[in-house]
Image (cartoon, rainbow, N blue to C red; front, side, top):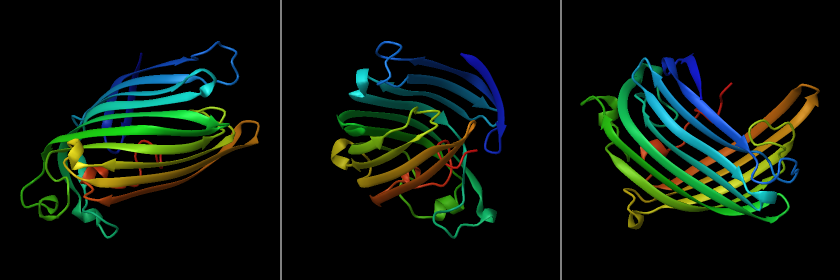
Length: 238
């Protein structure tokens, strides 16, 4: 593990520890199996935010199976501007919540570069607090109070990238459909569909162009923290 120190508009100054393990599940010179990575992270900020998480991508021999696993806990006071495309900066207000996420996803290779799989998603949002009479209090939406969601889904992907975390060439296509149901102990019933295209191409010796198209759609009683957002750890980050 190594110590980290950084500053962002959302956190102010933050510090913590981060560690990762890179390995192959087969022999070191196996060109058919990409390098697996497990990352562990713990962060605390001057604004009393904290995040602890594990993120793993494991390629089994000859990539017959690929396992993705993410789990995290966060206490992250956030901003609320309302919902939709007509929100205003002047409406910004703070609210507080804690969140636990567990997200396993396993895929099996059926043809070259082509995978089909299953995924599960568990999220528990609790200790939700906001100011009585505020915009958040007066806006009607699902997920305003403590809740949890449980969902299971199917995935399909096509992946020719030469690396998961630092690709210099290849294409990645993936679509995923997940259903959340009250019969599975979920507070709300809704469906989520995502589709993604990533393209990587080396243009000069030390320069790579990466392009990404991403769709995130939900249908039904979608709680606030499961709605589509613009930006975050995986999108629109420099």
